[in-house]
Length: 264
Length: 178
Image (cartoon, rainbow over all chains, first blue to last red):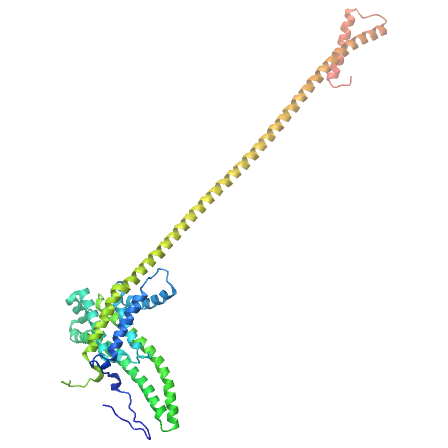
């Protein structure tokens, strides 16, 4: 489905950004699934691992300036997310949350990195993958803390509710805790990156087209303005990339916290 | 087969996306758990120990300084007390010495006075004795001249003279002019 919108007196047909901009064939003549987003995801994993291995080398109790920056990032997740949400036994979840944030963030930053210019998470499979892991992690954390029965009782039959109301409350809790949480996690991440990339495409592709192929001078001006404006959009996307990585991580931590909480 | 609803981009295009996503995330997680987070946490523990140790050392040093200060204060107080005592002793001693000297001077003066009085008394006695003898002779001679007769060997005359002299002495001792 590639709609062609002919512009008045245009020298080339305009192809508006759409879903096809998010679909890639195999690179280097490989199979279709071996595509750019997959290479990006692997690259992001390698970058994250390499960065943290480098950062954790030769840590001193009196930090150097470089180590201070690493510690700032590390404590942003360790203290700002894990400890705040999980309380005293947060240390077990620090590796996961730190990896989660780093992995999503690098993948998101690929949206505005000039060599890639595509957010990996705009292919929903990667967002679903992270949501599935989050779902497993928070349910497993609850089961390990309270046992299967205890965890289900706590999450489906919250205390302090009059017994007849369980008819209403239990399905809601089930939907909320078991279904909605991973869905919203994945969809939120995917939707933000997808929409952000689409907006960038509209301003860059549309602006370029107007600038190069516009039939009237006003179109050229509009194209230039649109391209200039795309820099603002990039700045906005930098914020969105970071925010979405942070939100995904914080919500995962919150879900784990509510699973292992003693009372609902 | 095509799903009943077209989910569009909400379903992954390739299953590889989910598989690789899970795989990569798990690899990242495991590496961070094995290598990165333990290093950071160990460093935090060491740092906390170091800071705590430093604080303990500092508080110990402070306690030592306070003890030393207290000791110096005590020593200073002792020295002050001692100095005051020495001063007091010296004052007392000086007063004692002064009193002793004064007493001694007074004693000496008294002794000298006594001695002088004795001497004067002795000389007075001597003079009186001498005078008595001379006055007796002189009076006898004078009386003899007045009476025209010698009283030198007369017992009666001698008794008269003696009585006269005794009267004279009694007058002197009563403070009348001789």
